[in-house]
Image 1 (spheres, rainbow, N blue to C red):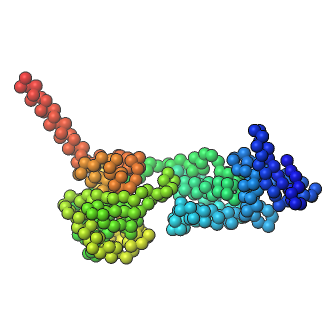
Image 2 (cartoon, rainbow, N blue to C red):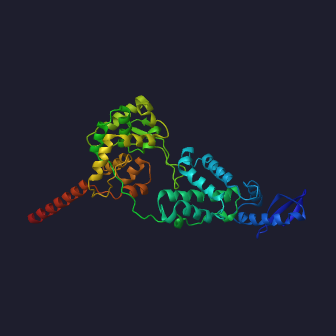
Image 3 (spheres, rainbow, N blue to C red):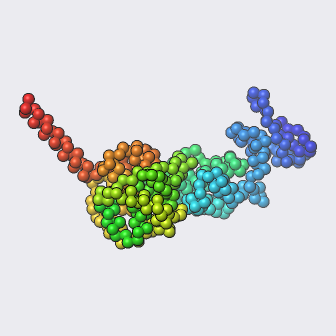
Length: 393
């Protein structure tokens, strides 16, 4: 239903229950506006059906970034999406640059170069065909995040920028992401004796502190710049944001678990950190790129290179991998928690700042060879005890 309001068209939608929703458009009250009015009504209809009022829909369409030809201005949409992600706190500027920017820029390039995709599913399909041809990256992180991030942008374009409904992504993204061809690489924990060798081979006391903190407290290397001492505990203010936890994991207090042969190391590290603050750490570990600095140092370390070579050449029968990486120091904390200190998976997950599900999927396959042999010895001893008891009766 339409009527004249001061020379402009007011559009009204009447619902089945008798309620109405209206908005005054920018269209002049003139016969020449008929085609534009029909087009506007067609665009508003699905938005109202999705729960928006006519006024909200008209306002949204009025603010939609469009080019000179009236088509959606995708560079403007991409910039609006970036600001939305940053301003809402969903991602940091660094995360945007490292994770989102490349995929969004590639999508905008496809949307502004002929032949252009004409729908959301069409864009995602074009991204796969262009950047992941012949099954490249099927099921792997880069392809999965590409599709997921662009699906987010497309929903934002429709819901917040007034783009046409045809730009909505498919409800099911599995076919676009593809199936992983190989099993996930096995996680490799560093052993306690290897930690001792790494510490002894590190001459810079600040790097020894950084390595010790990651090993004794099971830190993500990036967390090194957000640490403080809370009595006998290490407090970490880092919040890891994921799709399942966009607000980020909560800050946590961590119990130090000394490696075998390094008794008292956790307490010493806390004392150093309490006295010196971030001055106890290398310069590169005092800011948000702490993880990068830690990886670079380890990968340049001759001792770490020797440990990597030894680990790769040693057959593993315990459900863990044979590729030692800097993150293996964190994995070693999980192994030590279960097999040396007897900490339950639920408590270990809380100390490490992730969910029980994540902890179990990452570390559940581990059965250290020593544990298997120890279990076998216990079983054999119990069988022998029962045999002797039967003879006595």
